[in-house]
Image 1 (spheres, rainbow, N blue to C red):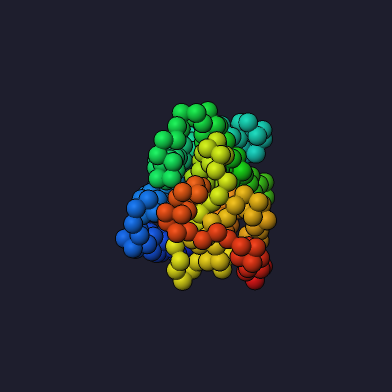
Image 2: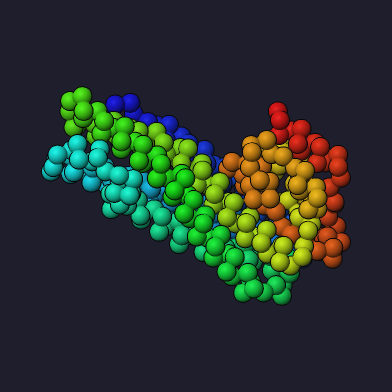
Length: 304
């Protein structure tokens, strides 16, 4: 079996370093600002910390679920005819995987979403103190449930199902159960990096979606792009930081990754946020409105 632990730990360390840099940079920004702008940046720092906490909690729970699933599969292989697992239909295999611990990871994701929503709400209130979130509660509940379900159905479950099926097929050619289990563990570990990238992106998308719904309800169509400006900031994001983009310009932005800019920013693993702003806020904070040249520059940089 090929060991992937080193690669797995390297990816995790890189993510943690990027997150640490982002929090440090934005905290410095807040200290250099004043008034509502400082309040907004502090709220975005809180939201970023909530997203980081959600990612770390999910990663930890996912590993526990993986370990529990391996135990469940091994028990099934040794306690009964292992080939019966290959005959499970999709619904039966889903139930088997949930019993194997994956349901815990889904529960953890849903729980962490609440902290992200609260932080995103605070950022909105820095702009619109009197905005009533009760008016969009049903929409936010829908976003929350669909995001959680999508993470499970599109990111986690397919990999687990494929890994189990591919490993168990080896039993048909008389591969020893111990080797089957080793191969299954290796497959699940190899998939962790891409899974966590997707989960991190979906978590950030959730926070931005909360913001987008609030902005639309409040009738705000100008967005300030904020976030870290450090050594790993994408050129696309760097071209837009601290600029105000209107709704029309937003639709023309292209991060080059096939993801919506309003909910995904610069793309996968993006650490930046959109904040809807009023004309009064822009004037008070002395913000700069993006020109077409800025939009073109961002789009060109995304193609490099």
